[in-house]
Length: 237
Image (cartoon, rainbow, N blue to C red; front, side, top):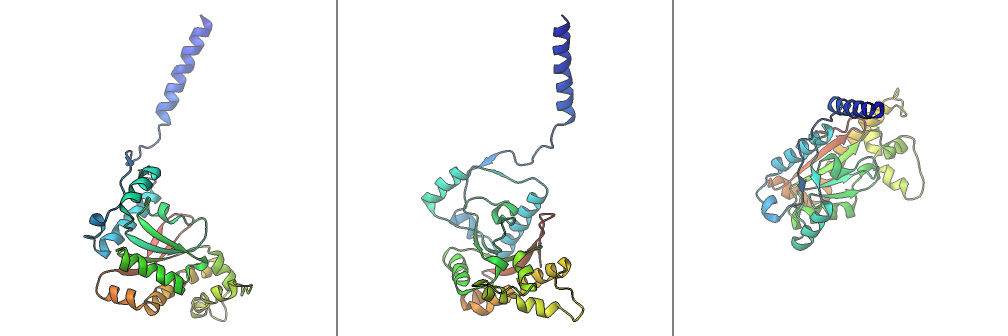
């Protein structure tokens, strides 16, 4: 009898704890299997696509991201091809998972990555493919705070192929530093990351006549942004 009372008491205690510790209900409980098709993307304006990216990042920050069946999405996209909304040039930093921070799934965005999110001919060719050939409406140059490439550029690192790559960040450093600047200061380096994203947007416009003309016609937008590793927030500017 005593063991029975103990068992019933334990069950009641667990039920009480479960009621007190019930997690906040996620707003998106259904599992998505749909992928973007041409008919979904073609009517969208660059501004509306930019809004979708901002809304996705807000969902990420607030823990309200969508549930997705990536395997099902892969199968569907294999039948109808890919029609991503945007192409994002990101740093290679493993803490910047582009699709995740914008709450996007398989086939939603093109992602091209290089340390320091710097522009090169191959990057520009990828962007042209995304926008002119596949119909993407936005080009995002995504820098991030606490960037190792920026830190290395500020430290004057010269090593192998990294030397030329890091040299592309130097104009951002030169434009911000003064004689009193501490190049090792994290706040300064974060400002360099932001300035570098702005510079790379201009590098896209100067380096690709195709993308420049598409932007001038209002067919695409080319925008800089900065990701905060601590908050998960993406600042568009």
